[in-house]
Length: 331
Length: 269
Picture (tube, rainbow over the protein chains, first blue to last red):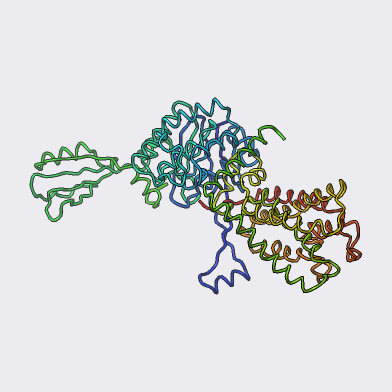
């Protein structure tokens, strides 16, 4: 049995539905109308101990709902969740001591007090022994470069500082599993890099199991080997990050800069786009790798035209994900 | 209670205090504001009642004694039950999710992580002032028996109102917002509770005894100590029931709370 087992889990919310304006409001007051919204639809997956998994999907796909069921906040309607031998929503008190959750959009720190006061409170709540607390605090503060603001009230922190403090707050009790729900949202490039490195190191050294939700594909590319994509409540991809390219990224792209204006004769299975219109000096060639051999295309181009520069590129993961969200690729 | 539970209660209290004292002037002014707001109400009633000799046999000191129980119990109540008073907001801003993620009892966290000391000082302070002003003038013999009775009655009164808060907080799980219900069932009934219930219509009396049992918070305990004639209209055993009503009501409501938690839906993201 895996460390985290999610088995055919569904969750439906009842959403109040009313027409616009005051008449709609009054009508709703008399006869409330509800709409059922299936946030999570029959999802299954499993995660092994020490894995770091990216969990992505467009807004409203059901990511947060899934994380809330995994962390014991919500009961699933059907299906079962089992983490580290616990059923999160039934054995809440025993279970939550072994997990950490970072909600990027919601701080768990005391707004008016210095960061360190929130940490001391968490130490008491989680019954963290003194030496463990001191060791963790010192280590995380060094890794996230926090000594400059540990005594500042949370309300005075920048978003990046607050996020780092929130990440430490979720880890002081040495959890075995951490759920990150958008831990880089609104953080600048440098801050994001710090957080990503921290997360990678924690996974590599402490073997902490992690599920990582984000909208920034670079977060995923720099931290996770495995990726789960959900859309409209259903799982649409579960596999290696690199597998996305194999599965969906079969389009290749060659950008060519010619020595002078030229017209290229049509080539079978290759789409040609002008990049420097109206001059014909730069063109892009798009084709499917299984239909056209890249070396034969290059050879024929080099033989027939004078070429100044040439770049071959694979599709970017981000572009592929966008295609998956938009339903442009067969799933 | 386990040792570390008491330790955590201490840390919570320290955290609350530190937060309040981030704004020292505001802390003092707000306690004063609560005190004056409530005291103004009492002063208006005081001068109105001076026009009458008695109200259904109750003179002005006896009425103020009745009031003092209401304010004292609220002062104690709000030290422990602020988290339940503000529970609607905690649910809506996702704060309750955070409580669920921590390995401690949910109600324990709600109760000890928040305390409105402004309201406690304001209401409790007024309660003490009214008690001092009235208790010597209403003919109560203060001996061990009556002091013990008084203390258990205050505890019972706190539990009764705590149960009402807990009940309304539990409804939040289903309705998300219950402030108007609190206005209706708590604060409106509390206004009636400032007076001997015998002056009201039977329907209101019924509500005060059996629906939102404010009568057990101050009227019946005051009757035990004052023995006014209008007590003849009610079973005399009611004078002894306050602690029992408090305990039973609180336990039943606690069951309702436990049962309702599984329907908690969390707020959006």
